[in-house]
Image (cartoon, rainbow, N blue to C red; front, side, top):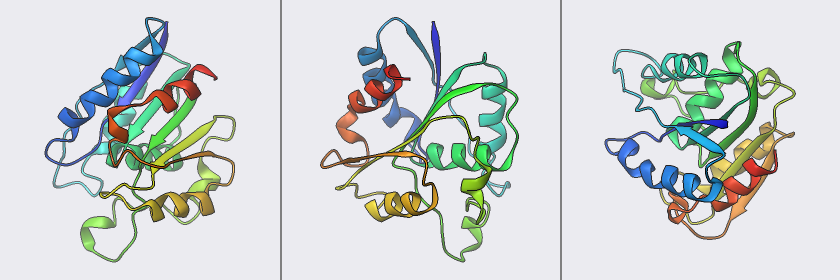
Length: 180
């Protein structure tokens, strides 16, 4: 059985909203895949709201050959974790859906921003995929373009319509996971 760790998006209802994405992934992938979908808690007093440590703990609790899937805030924090910390588990693939590319000088954003050389620090032998809908109203499609400029070795999937939640249909992600 292949194992997926799904890291949901942020916001007040991020975990609940992303349950539909997990359901879509389960339906498309079938019984050969098990999806772990933990609820990550916001910790207001930490620069990254405590997400990196929680994601790291969930990765550590899993077996090698883990597949990471992140949506929105969860995708950006997964990328931050992988570019700033050594991971002791073997990761088979990284799938990032509509991740914000944090920028700006606001204090609350400083702990979310990637380091300038983050792309060089990502694990070298792991396939990385980015997905973004052109009509995303929560995270502008320009963020996708920012990642394209920085992470040259990744695979990028532009999606015409589907909004921030990809119409709750992750078939495109599932097909890439199956192709690993």
